[in-house]
Amino acid sequence: MIDLHSHTDQSDGTFTAQELIAEAVRIGLKALAITDHDTMSGCALAVPFAEAAGLRLIPGIELSTKYQGVSVHLLGYFPLRQPSEEFGEWLAFLMESRRDRNRRLIDKLVSLGIPITLKEVEAYGKTLTARPHFARVLIDKGFAKDIQDAFDRYLDESSIGYVQRHDIPIQEAIDRIRKAGGVTSLAHPVRVAKNHWDTLARYVEELAGLGLQAVEVYHSDHSPENVSYYKSLAERFHLGITGGSDFHGANKPAISLGTGCRNNLNVPDELAEKLAGLVVS
View 1 (cartoon, rainbow, N blue to C red):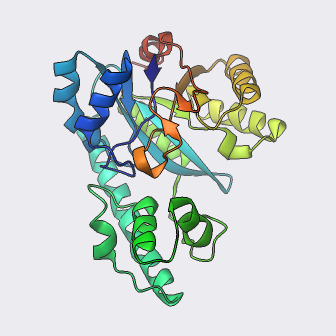
View 2: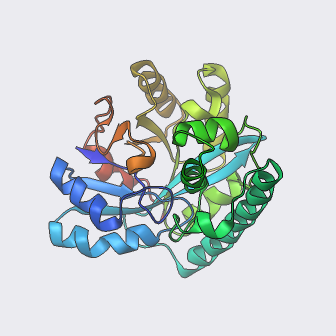
View 3: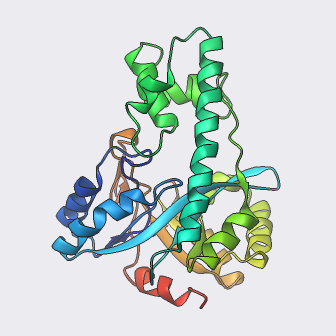
């Protein structure tokens, strides 16, 4: 059993790097990728714990991008080596963009009559402060009953408090990851085009032409029908396959590391080995 999509408290998860490695060992994972949003600090913190436990740890990243006006998350993996210093400097630029969005989100929530400060939100965030941390403050202040309610009311794209982040073009993200020695995978495609099969097929074909190397076929949000279709897209456009739970700890309590939502996930072990073969030298 492996899991190629997980988050620590260095982005929007609740497990520390040490706790995440301990959980991976407890459930018997053979390989784990930490794919925090916009930062690789969680993975760096996890290295000594993974080495001590004999667990294969694959450095990764998840980036928010835009493609044809659509929000698309892109996973990046570095199975052979750590990314370059130049890639790290680019991530620092993305972090500043996220901070700008957070400041604008504070202003929007205050305008809606919610007394909230960035300091309060950052107390929950670590390296990165994200919307789940805003949700926890909204819960503390009585403006939401739980994280899902906070998103539905104030933080989701369709809510009254949503503030658009300046997402980067997916072409730039693909180029940056590949130049740094990484492998790119389209994250949770069910969120890209829902179940509009033809639209997603067109997107995947076009993204493959831009340098996309894989599709996240296995995910906690994917039904058996989704898995079958995404696998067919990967085969049709000669792309690799990745998969993972998208574990966030208490921020997504229905999702378990390795096994997904109510045991709906079983990522084939061989996908971890096949990642290395997708790296372009």
